[in-house]
Image (cartoon, rainbow, N blue to C red; front, side, top):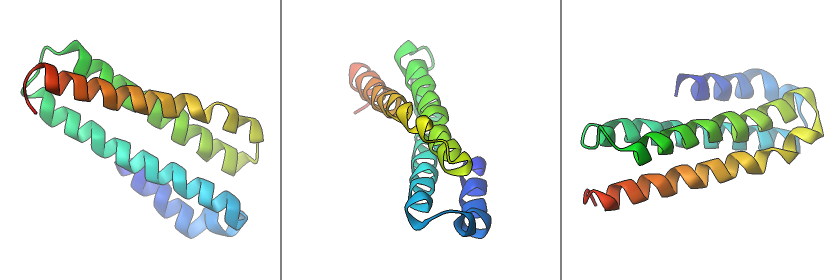
Length: 114
């Protein structure tokens, strides 16, 4: 969460001046998804108190973290380095986000927490 806030502040005070409006929008998307999925990791921490032995829940956390690193990370790099090929790996991070949320849902429903 702290990194998402730091990247958001850095974007608002430094990066915005360096980028075209289109590229800055991409940067903001990276921050937004970083923030939402960091909140998801906090949610997972709370749920893990009730499901401490759930492998599915652990994999959910791994997938959300991988999504942050790959999705948001590739967008940060794309905008800050103006290297377009980073956009080609962004969807892998999106798939990791989807897998993470699906694993969380399955774990919660499997153990009757929903």
